[in-house]
Image 1 (cartoon, rainbow, N blue to C red):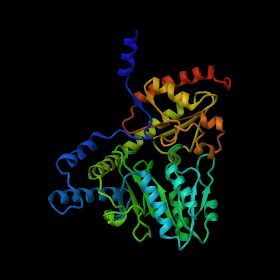
Image 2: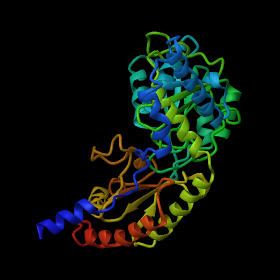
Image 3: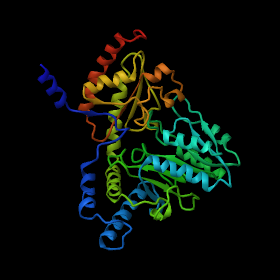
Length: 395
């Protein structure tokens, strides 16, 4: 009996629906990276043959990533990932422009690294305004404009929210920033390649990108800095990345990042994810006592579905799904081990009970219709079972 159970557990196929946390590295990406570990392993700052080959690979990758957001190659600076890029953008702008002003505007639903960077700046003399959002997760553009003062130097608004998938109207925000001559930064880690992201059209000053959300390797990202933006380097050393981000570049990772961007440029992937996302949403909403968190249609990330289940805990749902071989999440992977209600869900007006009953399912281009069918088959039974033992009573 035990032997049979072990066989079932270890031979069970894993259905991965937590692609908002990280993604499987595409085999084509791995293939592109391999030579830079063993054969073309030069330091991109070296002037010999191997160094020049590494430098060429670096610059080719820079161009690919720049093209993906309608930017110039010289405006892309490589980092270790989204957290570093967000910190560099926010702190770098703050200290480079503190003679001009000390006021930054952001939202209550930013990624933790943005909120914590802003909190640190508050402790160092800067003023931060945290914008409210409505029940779908959108900021009020009128509130944004009213919040701008003569000392405002930066507006930082996440593009596609990592928990609820809501896509902000960057084009309208960019026009407001242009009118008031304020720098505009967006965290696009979740949205890059999944929806339109045009640095020029949206009047973006700085854009945070990362690799591991789009089937590239972990530990590599980029920051777009528009030419002419006044920013202070936050990491000092040998002056790599035009002096903006010192440190030996992760050539293999950067090559993988660029390859992932190339592979993701096929818009068929978006349609595939949208179709499966909509199938999930349509069928899960048939379960009684369920609500969708975030926006709908094209104002939502193509791979994101977030629900609240009345009368049950999201952690319990996730645990039962895990037993069935389904990986899910209750929110951001950077904070979900904390059992406090999600600040994103409370910001959109959910009660603590509703927030604690949340489940996030995030897809990728590798997600199949059969996997979604299986998830839809097992989830209703899990919810029914949990509600039978729920202290909140039946729905």
